[in-house]
Image (cartoon, rainbow, N blue to C red; front, side, top):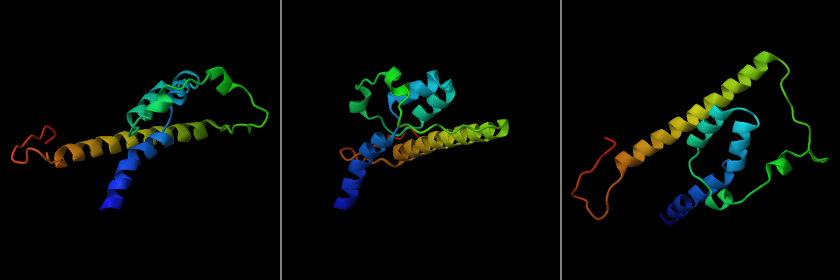
Length: 124
């Protein structure tokens, strides 16, 4: 039981650290011109890492060419681009559905520890 509590306590931090930062989302919306995808990924993110939210990274420095950076692969054919876009939007929709399902289940299955006789179920 203790191991499960530790794992559940650490999980939001782990999920937020591996999630996208605000700079990455803003560059996806502005530089890559994919604002709908950026909005969907932000809505499908489970949590926000607040200490990273207040760090400032210069976008010009991030986009600057670095001699050790590998060239980025880009699909050549139009149907490859269409397939990749379809896969990206499908995964974003799946992440939003996952977050919505988890929120609904938590709302329905929560038990109030200090008022066990009361029934408050706004998500039922």
